[in-house]
Image 1 (cartoon, rainbow, N blue to C red):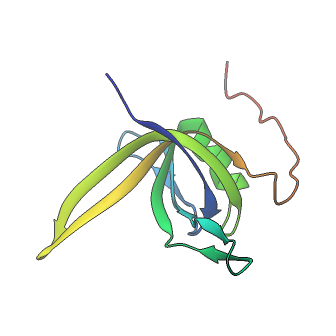
Image 2: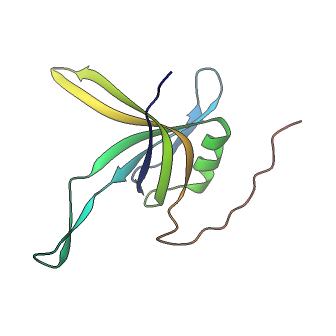
Length: 123
């Protein structure tokens, strides 16, 4: 199966909602905002474009790690499978972009972090 894999560089812009799926697997959901910036040579200034928002979902151990490591305002680099969802809310057609995260980490252009290996679960 061909799946669209993308990398998004942005900022966590919602609280990480942590819980369990219907089958008992850990799940973490949050939003990532990506705001493109362009340098305007004419004015010598940076301008911000319209932001893009991605719903992010993490499963199992990754969900555990994200829930204990990430919060609102954290700069991140996230890679995963992109899914475009179309649905209706009343009379309105809604389109959302969801990223099924395969890998995520802090964007070290903006700060430092300390890696701590998590203990492996069970035998």
